[in-house]
Image (cartoon, rainbow, N blue to C red; front, side, top):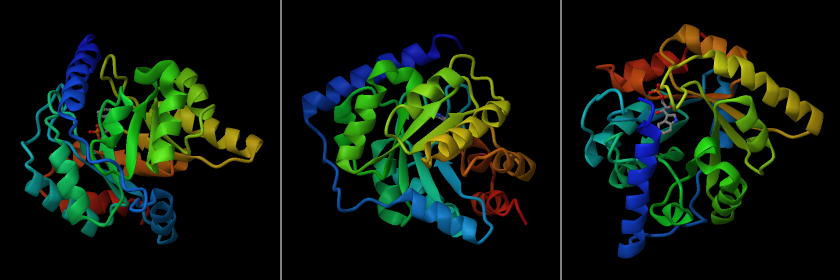
Length: 264
Ligand SMILES: O=P(O)(O)OC[C@@H](O)[C@@H](O)c1c[nH]c2ccccc12
């Protein structure tokens, strides 16, 4: 598993080269951005859990199902009906079997904010397809993080900065990003430990009190059950990003609803 992330970045570089060659980007319409904070607050009012449900055909370690753009759109509608707060769409083709067209179809068919889940290593990727949120991975971007965060914001896109340890978290807090994702999965070993959120979420909450700021904390990966959801919310997560456990279930609607209604 150890060199997977390097391989993913290499193939992403090729994709970026193609993108630049073909000049195939549609740009971002700033006037058409769906705010995630609004829907997270709305969801909480009804004692429901803000779940960002993910359209994830595969991961480097597991294949779930091939998902065509029309399939992606109908899965997203099930998730939306079940009370999901937003939809995450994998657009990485080689290791996650995702596609830009899945993002396009989902965003057209659903009214929810959509997160583009990919490995963003070049700012031109941000103009490829309309999206409300974009994932920026702290460990991938290193000292370019701040620049990518401000570029996304200047386009109107809400950056979700993903961290996995305390050091990355401190760097994320130094940027102007409002949304921080705590990945419970270590991208080098692919091991999952929800303790990552239990350790890091309270640090963000404390930071916000001390600095009179307000971040949205999203716990990501390895979330299967209502028990997981309750504990993560108790530790300070505002929302949860859930892929595999929903996608592998034969009833997308019921599994999403079960997780959204974990606090009942
Ligand atoms: O399928 P899971 O364990 O529920 O995880 C979802 C999501 O967190 C995961 O897909 C993810 C988190 N960070 C990423 C970065 C790239 C690709 C994928 C991801």
